[in-house]
Amino acid sequence: MRLLLAEDEKSLARAVSTILQKNNYSVDVVDNGLDVLDYAEAAEYDCIILDIMMPLMDGITALKELRKRGNNVPVIMLTAKSELDDKITGLDSGANDYLTKPFEVKELMARIRAVTRVQWQQKDSKLTFGNLTLDCAAYEVSTPSGKEQLTNKEFQLLEMLMRDPKVKISTDTLMERIWGFESESETNVIWVHISYLRKKLKKMDANVEIKAARNFGYYLEVNE
Image (tube, rainbow, N blue to C red; front, side, top):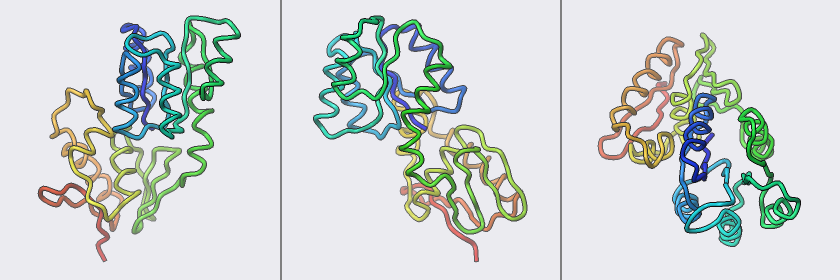
């Protein structure tokens, strides 16, 4: 699941992002409302965590603009203020939930699960291709011969490939969607994780192979 965290307090943003990533979320971090609009335009997020008080453009204005553009991604507003009027303004502007600082990260994760639950229920919780089944709730891949637990990045890679198995997904797209816009990782990190996945698929006697098309990207193919 991919999140956009908009928070201009660098230490808080760093701490929240680290904890979310350790809980299998992919997180992009920005510190102003204008970047929120740019990132939301360029990528698809499952939830945006949006601070109200930010430079260049405040969170309320950014939220209104998102909704005006037809972007219905779930949004959780963050603010140091606790007055009822601020909550009402946020919710009336299109927010799905509201959290007042300081907050427990466990509560934030519970709110994220709540606002994304309907969205994820609408998606298939299990994906199949060939004799391969990916359990999106358990981060687990299986065949009739066995099953393997996946790491966060392995899961995200395989999920992208299995949602459109015959579509070739470029390295740039994988880097952007899984590692984020500002990741310092080199593109060879994708090859490393693909290698891990291939070993796990082979171990389970999967009849599905991750193929690479030069200059086009990765895709899945069933070996008959």
